[in-house]
Length: 423
View 1 (cartoon, one colour):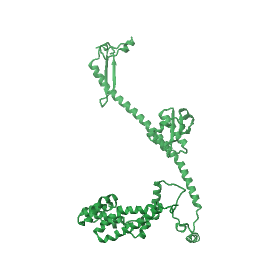
View 2: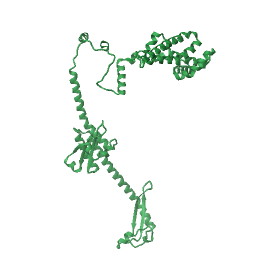
View 3: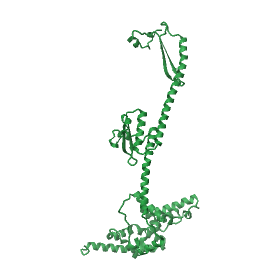
View 4: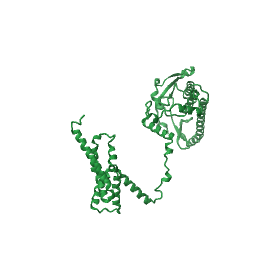
């Protein structure tokens, strides 16, 4: 069949060239081991005549393509081998660049950029050094293809470079070349860091050379002759360090360091092994003890106290308080904890009245004390006195202090209302 009789044939080439005309065509693909098409062979017009291609010719072409496939694979393998050889050579050059002696950063960067231009075949190359503290570019080196022949390396400030915006996004990334170039720069910076370290050592040794040594006897004589300033001698109550400031975290670290230097942690260390008083209890007993302790601690909360105070007072007045019930024992425990918490109100007046010293709004304190006694103290001590007569002295102490606080409150009120007391 002629090619023009096939709808898939494109006759555009034949229409443009009158000297050549396609009579017949045979196309055949050849595939790789994964059965993927790698190329198409196309055979046009038999050498003799206009006959169509026969099946024997198709078989011959198919077998020939097998050899062509082998040749193509070998060519690709050779190409890959050559490419890998070039890559290895570049890596060897880069490694030699890293480990050869470099005296300055400029010399190292210049060698890096020459290798980069020759390997990547680019017209221009830039290296921007990143500052470790600010995480920004500190210096920029620029090298053109023509400059690489003359050895001229342009160094400028980082912000003068026109590519800082792009390279800034890549400052934290790196490929193979970036790794070797970074090693080269790092290796070149070592001598500079070494010189700085040597300079610091010389300064330290020079400062220490002025330090004088003295025997213990001489030191003791100086201590006897001159008094070392101390808080006891000068009666200092407060120490301030205004020449420098610390934030909260630094202040906390300084305090912890001071405690460690003074040995306070070791001196006031708690022997935890000897205080495991609950270690021999069973799980049930342990939970009961923890519940009692938790209830006792929360009993000093006024919210908990006000919820249970009315019930306890009613049971105390009726005289039917049963101490054997668990709920009643918990209720009694709450009232006793509150009574212990506010027990300062029952102390003798000579001790009780000292509370007025160093208090803000001390002119209102007597009236506030009376209100506190009436609302909190008297109800609990009255109820406890009903349950046990031995707690009666506590109630009497509260009443006596209330009378004196009330008298002070009345005197304060008369003083403020009188014109003689006005300043």
